[in-house]
Image (cartoon, rainbow, N blue to C red; front, side):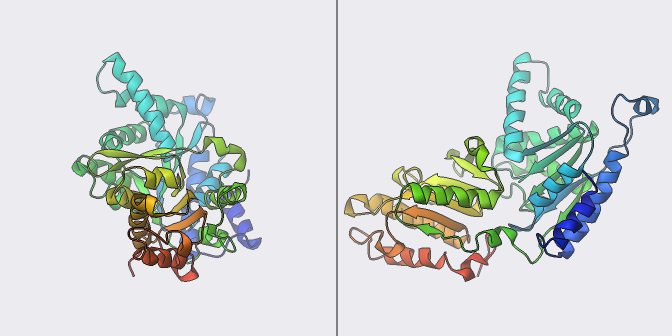
Length: 371
């Protein structure tokens, strides 16, 4: 595959990337990690068997930073450049689903802590693990992660991961967070924490020239939303059927199903968000967890839809306050969505916000920015 560092420099030379001091520092650390991982003899080889003790596994890397700063791109490039056996890359949510499935099998055996054999099994399958979008949304994951990742590291697994948040902000304000603190300590001590917050938002650049509000609903709008999703996530259209879903925990213990989500981008139907009984906590949970939201099937609302209109207002307020990027397919332009019914006068403020959310000034704001 060639040197990771050289491949990165080639992308700059070709104009695919722009010089970025934060990226440069991270790339040099990853280049060093590539040398460290590739210098270890393959498991089972003559050199591997001559070691008197198992070689020390290289220290991993935790890359965090704002949306579109190249974290996933660097991870993909590094993974493709790394020439070792037993390497594995996964979206963090998919990895945790696999872990829970393995834990369920081990629990049925009733042979002690199920996390220990799961960690050993994962370590036997890969000595290098790469995770994209590490985020913790529920107490079930939080309760097991410290023991699981401690087991992986102690078994000699090297880990790199990306996240929009620094380790200390993971699962912030979560239920029983004190049980999660050992995992944060593990990340800070056993991985090199590197910030990627350079000046270029590549994901925003990909939206350049893309219409964010499509009228009317139909095949053309649906195709435009699909294309936008793939531009934002780098996910191949050929794998559209395999885009992961997620269950978010809403304060109070309820769960919210996200039909499609990847790399901080979520896809919902208007019906799921606003025709069902939902409240501000649901919408705030979405706004906190996703930097971009795609909503399809927004109808023209009338006085018979006053409840749906009221929920839509609350939803847009939450997305707007957290500076979430919104892409939508609707039957009308924002100012014609709800012109008659209870709250239609107040809806004018929502229409104004929907228009503002398509502006360059709004799109330039980072997720969660306070202005």
